[in-house]
Each structure stands twice: as structure tokens, then as C-alpha cells.
Length: 393
Image (cartoon, rainbow, N blue to C red):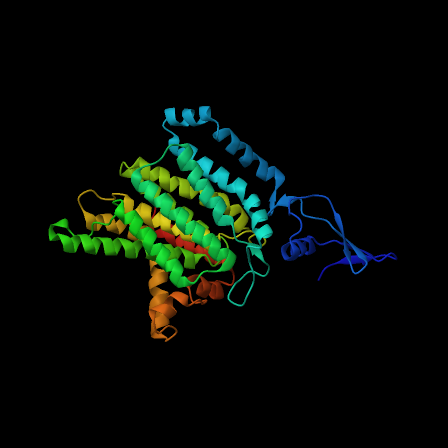
């Protein structure tokens, strides 16, 4: 309940910033970053609302230093310094983090302006409308870090073009909603585009000729589409998808540098930094997330990480061992996808492929753990701990 004081002139002064948050969320005529109180005419009453003095829950004195760091890192001289000292990965990491962190408040305002909000319902855990364009900040940080550092190949170009396509479809889905069939078709097309540029699993030995080629292509397509959707399904709690995305990218980067694949490592580090830059707004010790990834963000994170896993050569001359490393890193996503698929089929919740792709429920592992552990933040920490325990640095 809001606390207020009423005087003789029917002026009401609200002491709780909760009212300001709810009012902005529902009507969206103002931003969360202003400090001045405003007066609103409501049925001949003047309501004074003191807006929050921070950006999406981040205080100004915590927001400005990363913003300043980002501006410095954009200068060519500083980039050349990191390059000449062999610390290119540090520049990629810090720049992706800084751009993602700095752009989240901007994309939040855009989301409010366009009414791209995730409204509460029985299936969801949040209780107020929340902006959905956090994925735009993450993707922007990822792209900026790679392009400014000149990290580019034909194969990576195919991944980026496909990611842009999926991102655009995801943004439109967050805005107007698109059927699951259309989104799956887009993922298949983007997967084929990546495969056509040579990013293919080599699990089946090439001695088997055409059978090996077709089998490897199908396995690659299944992997990319499966991981993409698994990451999207995981975006059901504060910090879960971005946290796992950052952790998976970290382990991919570690293995890449250990196997003398710095290019793959830079790409993984860029994704890690952009996800970490998003987390301060999405995973808070106290309070709820102030912005969500949206389908655009979670889909793109999953797609890029899945493609990077295929792009890398994790064990030279041994395709089976090369497959095991990504399986261990992505195991949690894979397990959740397999688990819910079998559970929904065996319990009769889905009777066809069409029903499977359209089905939305609270039967994922993180939903079940939330009921057991009694809180979504505990679930996020627990799931991240599981990945770390299976992939020690």
C-alpha cells in the first residue's frame, strides 16, 4: 500500500518510489532517469511524484565510470595499445561490456516508447510490465567489440548476418508476436546460411562420402536450432539466460585459447562481456529485473554460441573428442531441452510437432527448482554453479 499525506488543498505527496515506477511503467510519458518531481492532474488532484535518481536501478556514480571507460576504449590509440601488448582480448572484453552496459538505459526508453513490454501473466514470475530490448544492448556490445577490433572472416560474417536476421525477427516478435512456426523456419534458414559457409560438424568420417556430408549437415542444423531454442527457453528468470550465456562463452573462450584459436576466443570473449554488461540491470540482489533480454536477445545469444561451438576445432584429427567439449559446456541447456521434450510427450501435453513448438509451460528445470528452493535468484545461482562444476577452468 502506498503511504501518502493529504492536506486541505487535496494535494497528495507520495513517499514511495514504487508508485513512480508503476506510474511510469503503465503510462510511460516520462523517463526513469530524471530527478525533478512533477505534478500530475488526476481528477482535480495534484499528485507529486518524486522520480528515482538512477538509471534502471543503477546509481549515477556507478553508471558514469563504465560509460567513460567505453568512450576511452573507442579511441584508436588505446585500441592499438592493447593490440601491441598482446592484450587484444582485454580490449574486446571491456569494450563489449561497456557498450552493452551503457546502452541498456537507452534501449529501455525505446522499449517504453514503442510499448515493447513484457506484461505479467500466470506463467511469468514478474509482477510489473518490463521493457524487452535488453537483447539489443547485448547484441550491440557484441558487434561493436568485434567490428572495432577488426575481427572478421567469411564464416563469422555468415554468423553475424544470420544473427542480424534472427535479431530483427525477434524484435518484431517482441513487438507484435510471430508464430512459432515462422520463427523456427527463420532459424532453419539462418542455420543453412551458416552451414553453406563451411561451419559444419565433422562427426561422421568423410570416407563415407555423400552420407557423411548429409549426416554432418543435418547434425549441425539440429545442433544450431536446438541450442538456439534451448537458450530461449531458459530465459525465464532474472539473470538466467544472460548468466549462462556469459558462462558458456567464458568456457568456450578458455578452450579456444588453450587450443591456439585466438580468433574463436575473441568472439567468445565479446559475447561474454556483452552478457555481463547486461546483468547489472537484469539480476539484482534486491528487487526485480528492470529490463529483459526479450526473444531477440536470448535467441541471438543461443544462436551465436551454438555456431561458435561448431566453428571451433576443439580436438585436431579426432571429431568425437571435438564434439565432447561443446557437449560438456552446453550440457545444462541440452538436458533441459531433452527433459521437457520427453516429459511433455509422455504426459500427453503435446501430441504433435506443431503442438510441441507452440507449447508454453512452467515445466522447465528452473521452474521446478524455483518451487523447491523458494526463489528465482537461488535457482539462477544454482544453475550457474552446476555449469561451473562440470567445466572447471
